[in-house]
Length: 183
Image (cartoon, rainbow, N blue to C red; front, side):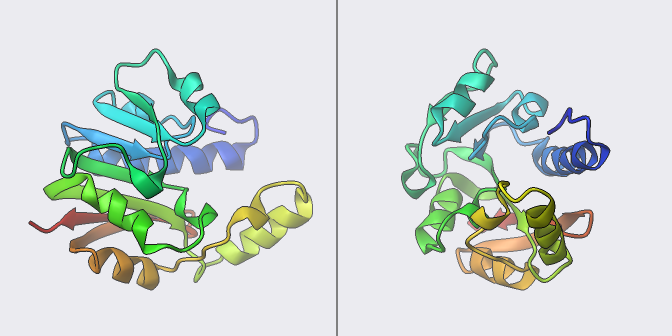
């Protein structure tokens, strides 16, 4: 999608990329949880990636950081091992479970950065999803089973001992929030 021939899709992916990379660029050790085959790892050579899907990790092999097949429900990393964690475009595909964000926060050191991205269902995202479902009925719009808003995501991550810092929106619909883990 980062190199899509479809202008809107390409623009969306690049906007997301710049927001995510910009929020953690200065951190020395970063974990991209649910990295998939996105470009984020390319912009952060100091980052390790993990994903449940082996085919996505194979696509990223040959880069400098580690790639680990893992589930966010039980990350195989030491507590406080990273200066930052990125968890973008994953949580909406999973059933709501407190263990998910607990694991994301667990691997970040006190004072480190936690970045979480997901569609904001209090915005025009719901319209985008309906249009996408109409135009591409076999697409993944119906795979979003957990719906967050700015307020619900902020409250959930703050409840895990993190302080809200700032956020960015991709086209006013996809929310990317940055937090600092208290310590």
